[in-house]
Each structure stands twice: as C-alpha cells, then as structure tokens.
Amino acid sequence: MALLARAAPENAPGDLFVDDSCIACDTCRALDPSTFGGGEDERAFVARQPEGEGRRRALLAVIACP
Image (cartoon, rainbow, N blue to C red; front, top):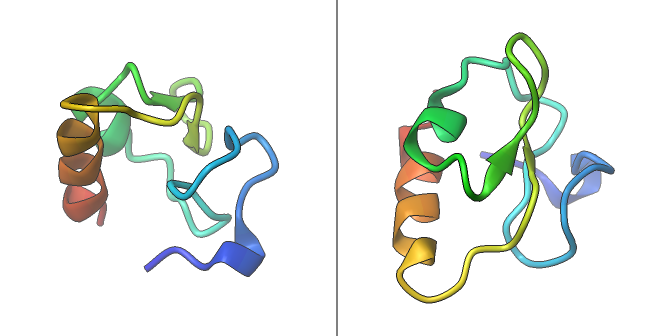
C-alpha cells in the first residue's frame, strides 16, 4: 500500500498518488495511461487526477499494482 509520507513529488495534486515503493512494472500505465505517467523503467506517478468514469480505471490500476 502506498504511503502518503513517501509520495513521489511528480504526482498531480489530489488523493490518488504513487509513492517511492513503485517498482516501475508498468501495470498502472498499461491499464490507465491517461492517469499514470512515467517512462519505461521509471517510477510511475499520477500525471493527472482522474475524474468521473476515468476514476474507475485508475482504481483498477491501483488494485492491480504488485
């Protein structure tokens, strides 16, 4: 589980975030590239906070995160 105290500084402001425990597996970016940013082999971050139906896809990515 991600810890707010360890949130990546690249995250867009809001309640969804990625912390420094990200292993750059690309799962979140594969499931929701409109929310999660970062390059291959780089830690992911929340590029923009999801809204509406986009939030469901973002939460699916969070659940799928190893």
